[in-house]
Length: 206
Image (cartoon, rainbow, N blue to C red; front, top):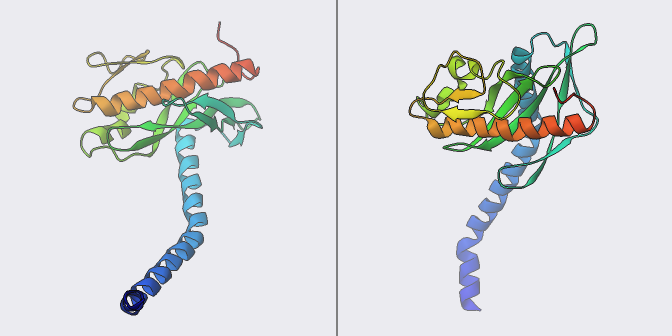
C-alpha cells in the first residue's frame, strides 16, 4: 500500500499532464478536421479540373464501385461524372491509391467520356524520395499516360517516352515508384471500367 501511495504522490502531475495533453489533442483535431478535409476537397477539385478542363462540374455516381486492392481487400470507389457546359458527359474521375517506395501514393485519375483513354493523373498525396521517386509528379512522366488506353499498362525501362501507348517508360533511378503508379492505375482503371460496363454506364469499346 505504501508503494502505491508513493507512486501516486510522485506521478500525479505526470498523469494529469498526460490527460490534459490528450484532451487538448482531441479538441484540436476536432476543430481542425473539417478545415483539413475541405482543403483536401479543394485540392482534389483543382487537380481534376486540370485533367478535364472542359468540365463545368463533377457529379458522383449514385452508387460506389467496389474493387479489390493489391492486398485483396474490398474498397468502395466514388466515381465522378465530369459534365460539360451543355450537360454532356466529358469524362470520368476517381481517386486511386497504393503503396509506393516510401509510403502510400494517392492519385486522382481521369478518363475520357467513353472510358477508352486516360486523360492522365495527378498526385493528391505522395512522399516519394525527393529527386527520384517524386518525379512521378513531373510533367514528362505524367504525359506518358495522357491519351494512353484505359486498359492494362506495362512498365518498361527503355523506350520512347513521347510515344503514347500502353508502355510506360520508368523514371531512371525510381523504378519502384514508377511501377507503383502503373500498378495503381491498372488496378483501379481495369476494375472500375469493368464494373461500369456491367452497370451499362459505358460501352466495352468493342
